[in-house]
Image (tube, rainbow, N blue to C red; front, side, top):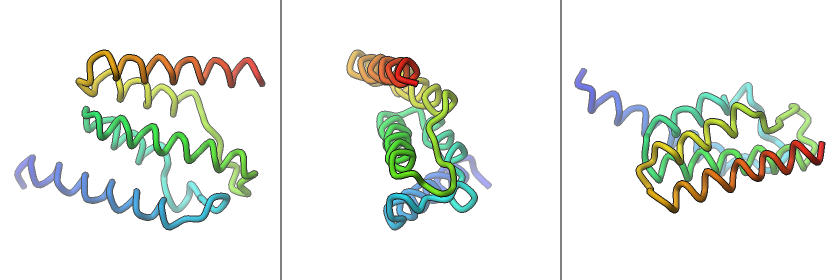
Length: 115
C-alpha cells in the first residue's frame, strides 16, 4: 500500500477514536477501551496544528475524567503533557504554537506544585 493510504487509515482511526470519546460520558472513559496514550501519540505524530489541538483536547478530557473520580483510574501523566508540548512544537504553528506549549508546561508545573 502507498504511504498515503496508510496515513489516511491512521487519520480515519484517530477520527473514529475522537467520535468514541465524544460518545463517552464524563466519568466513564476506560483506557482499556480507548487507549489514551496511543491515540494522543497518533495525533501528535500528525505534525499539524490540528494534531496538536487534538492532543490537547484529549489531555483536557483526561483532566475532566480525573476530576470526576473516574473508576478506571484515568489521570494525567507527564508523558501526556510531553506529547502535547511536543505536538505544538512540531505543528509548524509558529509563535502561537510556542505560546500553547509554554501554557501547557506552566499548567503541568502548577498542578505538580499543587500536589
